[in-house]
Image (cartoon, rainbow, N blue to C red; front, side, top):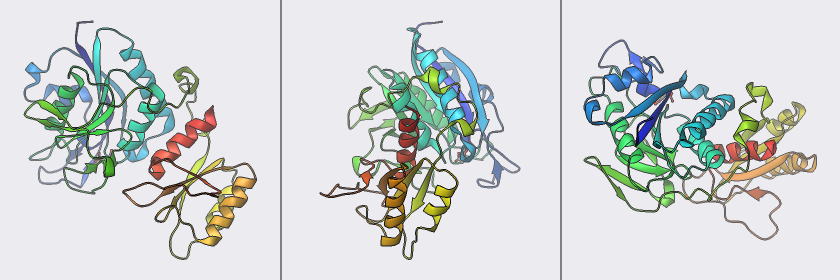
Length: 316
Ligand code: SIN
């Protein structure tokens, strides 16, 4: 391998999407172009430096699965082990990017940059956003001192722990909540506001060779998310218990509050050995623990990331 290689791993998404018309930004099919083709058509590609390209998956990220995430983690750790590799860029759909980012950060704990990028418009759009996002992601992957899993979209760098998709349509569809972004990419230069994620900050404590063999979704622990809302009941929890669910994340209201009927059902579930974690459905802030809490909180993780974390814990 050449010195200072970056590796580009493709997984599909809108960035690789195709529509019937250049004016159509929503009626497209995701994951139609291979990542090598996207790169070949990227303006300024001649200046992008040496790289290795691999297509790991080709999906709309709404269909992301744990076997695919584990395979991605295996490819990430394989390439990062090469001293000649400086960093990795992963093209991904926006819809579950935050889950994959959190999974990779906790499983791989990379000491080099792993940069997820995406697009809100398909590759066939009159003015697609994917090419600029891809170039910005490569800039971050080549930035001296960069490390950890981050997402780059619309000129903004987000840490895996904080990033959340917050808009259905806008090109700047992500934010980092209270924490704020890690930085920006401005005219090909990162401007940092905070430190890069540290490799030891979050650890799933799980070996990649253990999870890469879990090739069927059924090999993974069953963890579901339930939500608190006006008039919530315990019915969904009871139904999930009857199906043998192993873990539950509750997207509670406010600072972790629960309708008494849902709370009673969750406590019954916990008493039978099901792991229950309390997150909040509020997009900002985190559940602040109070004395006497009977359900553990998600330590600031959103419900979807708390679910990823709980699945990994149950595997240990
Ligand atoms: C996807 O998540 O794969 C489709 C939507 C997107 O990338 O914006």
